[in-house]
Amino acid sequence: MARVSKYKAKSLRLKKVGVVGVTAGRWLLEFLGEMIEMMPGIETPYAHLRRIDGWPKHIPRHRFEQEIRRLKDRGWIENAEKQGKKFLKLTKKGKVEILCRKLAKCTPVQKRSWDGRWRMALFDIPEQGRKERDLIREALRKAGFCRLQKSVYVYPHEVPRELILYLTHAKLLPFVRFVRVDEMGECQELERHYKLKQE
Image (tube, rainbow, N blue to C red; front, side, top):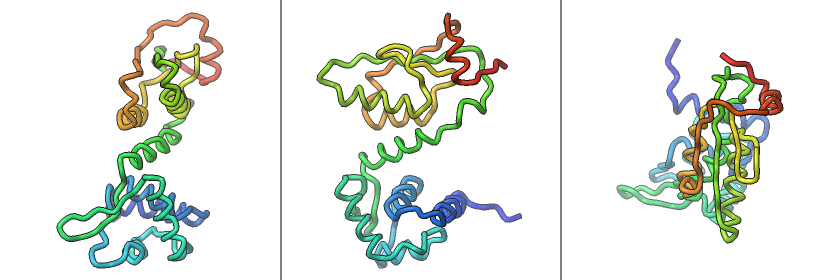
């Protein structure tokens, strides 16, 4: 059986998503998140995308152009040029958005065996940093962490790579400390929540 390239596999997955009604903006954002940039050469971005296997054919040109403007207005993508060729690429803000979305796709903890240890996330941000505090809480929640106390969250497995990448790119990692706890009392409720079974 022919080997499927990473690019081809990504296109096939997006094509399946398109069947159930993916938006042009979501498709483009995910595509750029994997490919880093889109190099259309002398073509318009729309014409270039239409030739890509996996482009949702039901999305018309005007919709694509609207989504391009919307994503630019949000600061997620921008025009760039390299070696005389124009292309679209993710901004730093766009990369953070992609990483945030990937957090929600982390492997469900119920599918993993447990080593009997807990990973604890601790953060302490002054009141004027409320926005950063809310972003950290939301990121931990999306990654599967449960709140133990006001600024203490726990998770029964290794800290997801997606979470570290998101916190790093969002410049939030310096505010968070991760520790491993070998034993923790009164955690039966957490064990039931995560449906844990030790190795």
